[in-house]
Amino acid sequence: MSEHEREVPAATIARLPRYLRALDELAGQAATTASSEQLAELAGVGSPLLRRDLSHLGSHGVRGVGYDVAQLREQMASALGLAADLAVLIIGIGNLGHALASYMAGGRVGYRVAALVDADPRVVGTEVAGLTVEDERDLAEVVRRERVALAVIATPSEAAQQVCGRLVDAGVTGILTFAPVALRVPPGVGVRSVDLASELQILAFRVHGEAGQGS
Amino acid sequence: MSEHEREVPAATIARLPRYLRALDELAGQAATTASSEQLAELAGVGSPLLRRDLSHLGSHGVRGVGYDVAQLREQMASALGLAADLAVLIIGIGNLGHALASYMAGGRVGYRVAALVDADPRVVGTEVAGLTVEDERDLAEVVRRERVALAVIATPSEAAQQVCGRLVDAGVTGILTFAPVALRVPPGVGVRSVDLASELQILAFRVHGEAGQGS
DNA sequence: TAGTGTGAACGTTTTCACAGCT
DNA sequence: AGCTGTGAAAACGTTCACACTA
Image (cartoon, rainbow over the protein chains, first blue to last red):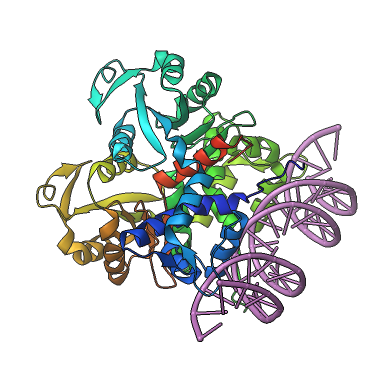
């Protein structure tokens, strides 16, 4: 019994959500079957890449026909672990955190916004997106109570590393941060970072010295 | 005269903003010089990678000493084209667009939020982050007036492709989208996409089947 | 016929290791 | 003595092209 059942490349995993959305769109159009070409088109990738990605999931399409939309959707959702319906906590309910709470509460699958937390006494106790903002000092307790697996950091940069450490200590294993600092986490904890300023700067690069294509 | 002056790899460009921030942090601590090790630590990358990246910019550190913080910062800012102070337009002033406007108006270098645009008559005319929201039908005019180079799409998904096309037609060459759809753009236009739901799904992946490290 | 699954080629990105400069 | 800059190698990711199959 070898231990390397699934060795799905990180780059592939990062594309699965797009494929999933493409499948949802096709399902909404009452399509029962789809070719790699169609799916790739919707997902914005080349069809060989999509086929390669699906093959990593041990996919079984039908040659000459394509993939069964419903079945593939199921398979992908399970690969992504969406059945779990993970509890997500948002910490830092300022402008951005507030918007994220509303935006995400609007019911995508695979997770649910379970708690909101802030350090500002003026914010604590207010209601946002149907949830009452709790005190940041109770962070560990909230994480335990809601069995929080994923956290979104929308605090000021200065607080991010401190908050991150406390989240990890409390048992959170996935962190999405909007603070523009490199977070230090122990192995076993996933971090993804979204940095608006950086994204614009990267876009700016191509502007000043002529352009090319970009993703 | 060969035309290939700078052939900076895309992966390197994507890291420059992080380096720039690391430099700013060091500058704030009154450091005049920094080693690749220190910079790499702050930026959250390995030091060989940082050195390689800087070498693509034709960097000149001092052996045995390190890099001059102020000079490198200057060099990097100019490589990124931050001097230009590009005009950014945000389209779609809902929850998210509103937050982005406030968040970004707070003065990072390299760009400035020059205009806000929305399709909803109830939003048009309101003031957000010191700017009056303009009518989406005047999009092309606004782009011309403010010489908009970069646009942020925060509209509903359904509107994104349509809006994207109009932005490109109006002359925008860089687009940052929050809508979870693959945008089609002509060559020469850069697109970067930030998708909150996807990020969480990607994080969820490692949760259900044990973990590893992740960036 | 139409479309998957994949070996092999390719290109890119990262790491290693160390020569060379100050 | 210390740290940069970079050749050479390894790892990774993508594309190509086509054998195979329903």
